[in-house]
Every structure is written in C-alpha cells, then in structure tokens.
Amino acid sequence: MRIQTNVYRKAHRRHAFTLVELLLVLVILATLAAIVVPKFAGRTEQARITAAETQIKNFETVLDAFEVDNGYYPKGKDGLMDLIEKPRDAQSWRGPYLKVTELPMDPWKNPYVYECPGKYNADYDLMSMGPDGRPGGGDDITNWENANNKKEK
Ligand SMILES: [Ca+2]
Image (tube, rainbow, N blue to C red; front, side):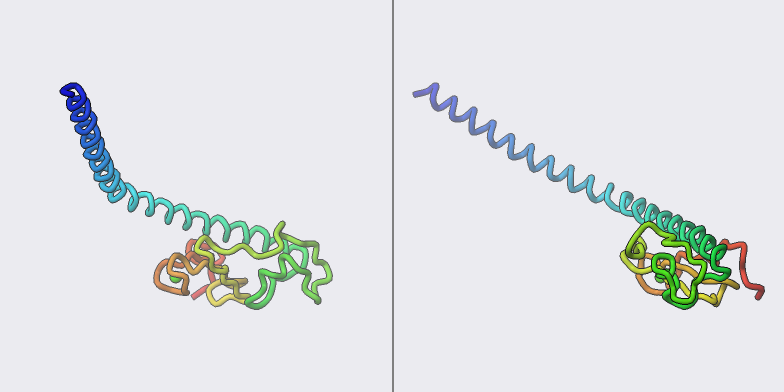
C-alpha cells in the first residue's frame, strides 16, 4: 500500500514536472518566435526584392533578344506577352523567348508592369510594384533606377 502511494506520487510528480517543462518549452519557443521571425521575415523580403531584380534583368535580356530579331521592343502594356506569343505583325519573330506559357508574376504575386515606349526610359519601362502591390510607395523595383539607358531629363 505504501509503496503504491509512493509510486503514484512519483508518477504524479513526474507528470507535473513534464507539464512545467512543456510550458517552459512553449515559453521559450514563443520567445524565440518573437525574436527570430521578424529577422527571418526581413530576409525573405530582401530575397523577394532580389528575385524581382533578377527577373527584371532576365526580362531585359530576353527583350533585347526580341529587339535583335524584330528591330523593336514589344509595344504597349501587354508587350511582355509578345515574348511568348507571336504578334501578328512580327515577321522575324523567333520565339517563344521565354520557356513558359504564362508570364511570371513578381514575388508578391502581381504582374510585372511593362510599357513601351517608356515614360522613364527611351525604349521601355519595366517594373515590379513591390511588396505593397501598387505603383509607387517607394518600394517599386524598376528598370530605370540604376539603369544606364536613362532618358535625358
Ligand atoms: Ca509599390
């Protein structure tokens, strides 16, 4: 009888200790999450920005190839589609210039914004609207900042 009680107490104490341990682990995890997640989130955002910059550079390369073949950059706001589907008036089109059936979205799941002729560049403007998903706001990733083909102002 006495042994049984001891065993029960031991088991009970062990169980209680485990609960405290669990709570402690939860507290530690919550603390870690509070510290680690914002830093990590910042990095993924930076990674997305880098991805958008890389995608724009890739578009530029492909648009140059289009220009070499056709003598002009794809026209209008839907010009990027001309990289995938042959425009009616493009006689020397040798695409598709992108190995996709749909244009890639930017890292925030918004379409890249293309315009030819450009407002900022002599040839064309290409940008991602950035994390806020709208033009402007200081977070746009464009091909006219740090571009060497800027229009004279
Ligand atoms: Ca923006």
